[in-house]
Length: 330
Image 1 (cartoon, one colour):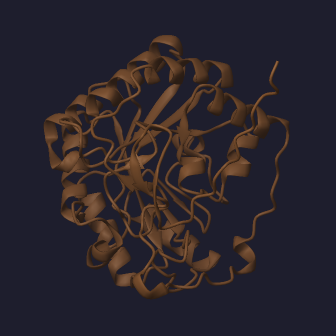
Image 2 (cartoon, one colour):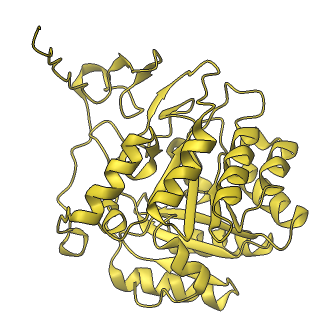
Image 3 (tube, helix red, strand yellow):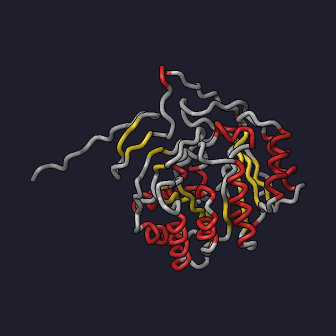
């Protein structure tokens, strides 16, 4: 009997083109390496941004479950700084429809390419089973942008949510979706599913939307999606997130809060932008913990139900605690 052949893992360099295990051609980490080798060096992080790694038993259990059921997580694909904390506490944000995004936002480390209609039709069942195995009481579902699909993946979202709720009726589900190119019937497809929270991230202030986000995204389009979701199903909480440290001013932060509150957004999160690779946008500055607390208070004063604000906060961070309004002191 021949010994089992061990195939070495090939490390793909960030910013280069490769073919993934589904046969999809993509750019590693989303942004091509700059011509001529020009890039933005990654700055040294201040003390409040340093995280002590922890890979305990629960972390390994969650990782094993995620990989066994062929699930993508935003925790891994987007290089989330909270992966140790969240997985060690038994929570994960599941990323639907694969790990290749049709857009190339300059802050995001997810691979970019054209999946050409590929979908894992077993994903609803795999996701529901994984939620049960991990005993999750609160689940966040997100995804890459899938502009290659006729409905942007809205029907797939709804199918996953429904299957999860069928198998886990006591689990609350939050969805962090693409903008579906502003097609409101697709937004309605998702909002009609049994969700508790509908989120779509504005990401940054109006002035910085481009170059921060892909040209197909816009500040106004995100506002329109959030406004329609709230008007269509008022009982569903709406949520959005901003990254800070990209060059925004405090007046622009206030303007954005006013815009969001004006369309009925319920929950806002603020976090520090962290440059994922040298090919991505540089950090303009590190926002201090004191400033994050000030911005949180601004939001609460404007009437948001909850504002989660801190350097390591991401839109899905401690999402279940936000729903319970017990996240004070982040």
